[in-house]
Amino acid sequence: QVQLVESGGGLVQAGGSLRLSCAASGSIFSFNAMAWYRQAPGKQRESVATITNRGRTNYADSVKGRFTISRDNAKNTVYLRMDSLKPEDTAVYYCSAQLRLGGAWEYWGQGTQVTVSS
Image 1: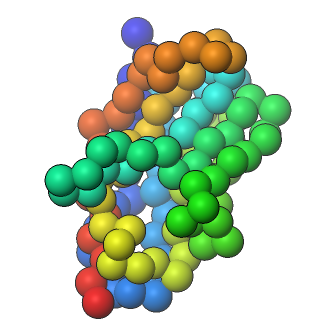
Image 2: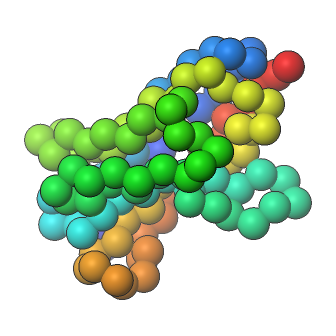
Image 3: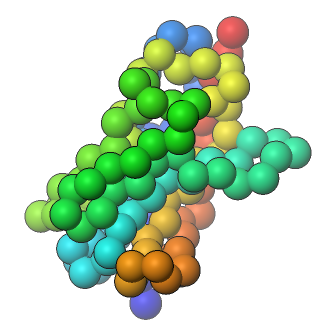
């Protein structure tokens, strides 16, 4: 059973930066892709950024140019660097893993809270 553990959330002022980490209990190279999602109060969970096992990345339009997803296969860790944070980025951020191309996002972390004050 794969476990994902997020860390790095917190309270930051608008315009500030945070780096989230997602540590996996197994080899992340075995996953087709990993991603960061977020869920704000009263809203549906949305995909923020995705990275494949070949390093291809994809971002939500709302975070393009501000967020950067990366991975360190040796450390079995995925990161989300968040710059120029806005109050609307406030949410619980979740790490997820997809085993196979086109498959479900089967594994989820417990989430880490990011709060951006204006």
